[in-house]
Length: 104
Figure (cartoon, rainbow, N blue to C red):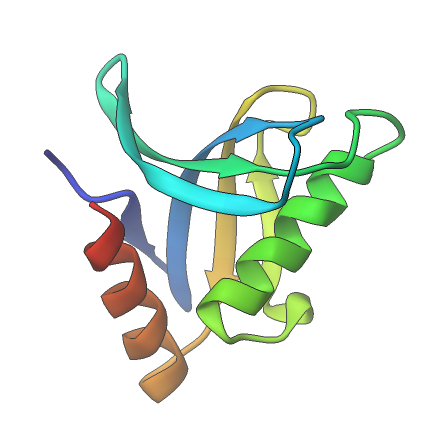
């Protein structure tokens, strides 16, 4: 199975399949969605006024050990399939990619 991220200028882009309204905030295993491998993410927030997207950024920030300000939604604002951009370099980027490779 392919990785859940790809290199991007100044960091990486992470492919996510988001399930809002879940019982708890959590990252799951990777899954194949069409021709792309995505990381499953579950958040308690509902998909209203960007709440689920903000909860996703907070969840990823905590799991990857990076500040929320380094994460942004590159695509999929109103879709379950999202691309999140991580702007990082050095050890922060190495930690994040190692964590994501462990989920593939």
